[in-house]
Image (tube, rainbow over all chains, first blue to last red; front, side, top):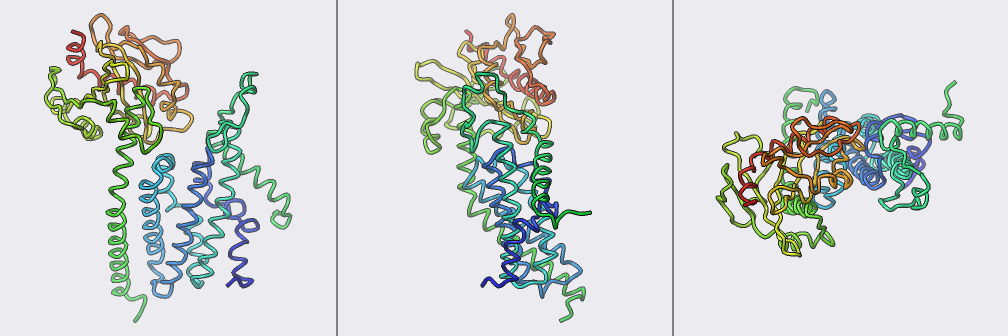
Length: 207
Length: 237
């Protein structure tokens, strides 16, 4: 079930080969959906689902896909899955679907997906591909959650919508940092995480 | 079979797209009823919001709505009621309605009765923000002149800037503002701090940094509410 190679496919993307921190993919949506924790988590789950299933589907049909139109095939599969996720959200979690609006649709253009399909699913069996999808989706989601935690805490003073910064702080002149809500601070937060991550993993540092 | 022959590629693409199309159509049909319920409930809670009412939970929204919104009206350009069947005003699709020419547009009004027996008239409004549509519901007192409450929503305004039209602090400003000055309809303007409207209308403070969305709210109020002038005048009498 979990041979050494499969373990690598699942766990490497969490840290050493993290799609956001190391491959620097999917930055655009990281900026967009991390204003608060709830949409970040829903987005994470959506990306994990789409990645795992598109990896499996592509891997299943990999021997039949004509190489000349493989990108089109990948796009159709991803787009179909994304539309399904979107429809399910509108039906079962309308509030979050309103918050995420266009960003769910933009999963189609998330480079992590196409990157993994091209680099992994086209050359590997379904099970390792499934693990690779889950791993990369998780790696992406972890970063989303970390960024969203700091942005929601400092930008709105809440966690999951509950106020965590006590009222007396506001009474004594504490203000939420409005800049944290805007995309530039997401970029800086991601950069700080990359900084910490590289400081701890010296083998990732370039000379 | 040769995988790179033209026939194979074309057949492959055609069959794949057909299959995906069937699956998507199936998913859409299966989920449609549930989605419609969600969308209608969202609209109901926005209307209730303009009346400062919120349902205790999501399941209670339709019941709460039915309790307070007592009559649906469609009116004509002269302020006369043309239709008052149930949900006729609620079902008007404002995004389509706004595209029609002035004399073809339907003018929906939701007549609401609050706990203290006072009547409010909720008018749906619809306009353009910076990135996409913005819309709202304005509750007018039965004097046909002052605003009781307002609720605004948007599709894709910038978070932290234009998106703040959904915040209570912004919407609260509209309360008790008058739509009429000296018996003339002037709407309520949204102005930058320190500026005053030239036509002497009542005004509220714009959101700093969101000039276009604020202007959108102002324009939407004026263009959508103006058609109701005869109706408001009739209410006053």
